[in-house]
Structure formats: structure tokens, C-alpha cells
Amino acid sequence: MAARRVKVGGAEFGGDSPVLVAGPCSVENWDMILEVALSVKASGASLLRGGTWKPRTSPYSFQGLGDEGLVMLREAGRQAGLPVVSEVLSVQQLERAADRLDMIQVGARNMHNFVLLTEVGRCGKPVMLKRGFMATVEEWLLAAEYIMKEGNEAVVLCERGIRTFETWTRSTLDISAVPLARQSSALPVIVDPCHAAGRRDIIMALTMASLGAGADGVMIEVHPDPDRALSDGGQSLNLDEFKALSGAVRSYGWPPERYR
Ligand code: PEP
Ligand code: MN
Image (cartoon, rainbow, N blue to C red; front, side, top):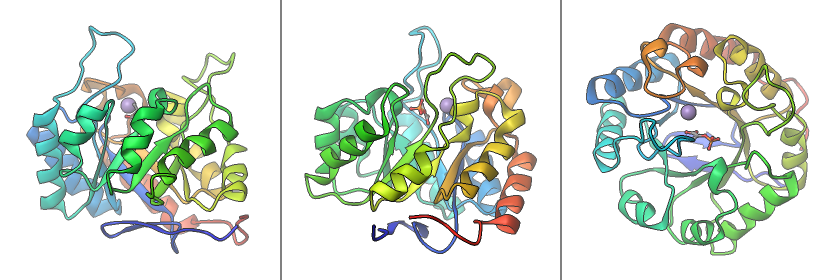
């Protein structure tokens, strides 16, 4: 199927090189988001991520900084020269965030939220659609259709692992989903190895496997001091580890033959 390119500022998904999306799980404060933004930019990232409305399993866990975090994310992106992506959990949040974000993220837990998908399809911004952890590849592609049906074709699919019986990882990275989604749709497909693994020691291996399978990029959680992170520290790389990963991606890139 003909490949579609999705441009978000200077980042081009489905273009000539793998896209690196990087940033903290959550925007925690101004100093940390600025530090991460400047560092990942210097290391080769082309899009800054950072959650400000967090879909946490426990309502007692850190829920994110909300609007205040969005302002910080946008300004950090501006100072670093990076476009920004963040997740919205509801239509109300989409209305508050759309003007401040370069790309809207729909998270795994909301992949089946058809009302949100429809509104995201009308918002005029590029969308990163994460695969639900209980969703088949077909359901994921149909969720993307909900967005595109409203006239928004700038959709990037993100595989982030599915629920299986395995307990040594948080989810199981479904590597087959990468070539399957790329064969069955024109949309770029990226991988989030951090939420799939839930542990930082295999992020590099999963990144290279993803590119080997043809992924158009990866999204990596990066924190200046992962052990002190307010969310997902165990699966976050520190600044130096991200620099090393970025270098490896640049050296190895894609295999000579990519399947579409
Ligand atoms: C995230 O990327 O911030 C996130 C919450 O991931 P997921 O929706 O894949 O769990
Ligand atoms: Mn996270």
C-alpha cells in the first residue's frame, strides 16, 4: 500500500529515516522538562513527549500537572526547537490542548473511545494512536478509520504491547503488529518499547527489533533521574542512555529491505 508521510514540525513519520520521539512519562516540573527537551534534542530526537493528563491505574498515583504541564511542555519544546505531543483523555481536554500541541496522543486505554476518536478526527492536528492492550490489529486499524473518516488523515499508529500471560514484562511487545499494520494500511507505524517492556534493560533490544521489523520510529521515555520519576521510572532511560540509543538507531537504521 502507498505509504503516507505525516509531518509534525520538523519530524516526518514515514519519511527517509526513523523518527525518535522522546521525553518523560509525565511533565513533573519546569526544570526537568526543559532539561529533558534540550538533552533529547541534542541527542537526535525530533519530537518531545510529556504527559500532563495521566491515565494512572490507581487514582491515588500522580495524575499529572494538567493545563500547567501543557504550558511547560510547549515552552520547553519551543526553547529546544522541538514539536510536542501529549495525551488527552477526554473531549474537554482535547479542546484545552489542541492549540498548544503539535500532535495529539490517544492512549491505549482510550483506543476504543469512539467519541474521542471522532473529535480528534475533527481537531485538525496530527494524531498518534496507541494500540489498546486488549485490541487486535484489526480493531486498532478500525480505530484509526474513526479519525480519518472525519477528514484527518495525519495519523501515526503506535504499537505499545498487549496483555499476555507473561509477567517478566509489563506487556508483551507484539512485533508482528508492525509489519501487519504497515502492510494493511498506508499509515506510518511506530513502537513504544517502554510501555511494552515496563523495564529499561531491554529497551535498546526492543528498539532495534522494532526497526528491524520496519517500524517508522520509536517513542522512548526519558528522565534525568529515572529512579526518582513520579511515573514509569523503571522503564525510562536517563539522558545518557537515550543518547546511546539514538546513536545506535542512527548507525543501524532500517534493514536494507523494509516491507510495506
Ligand atoms: C503514555 O505513552 O504516556 C501512555 C500512558 O501509554 P499507553 O497509553 O500506551 O499506556
Ligand atoms: Mn509512561
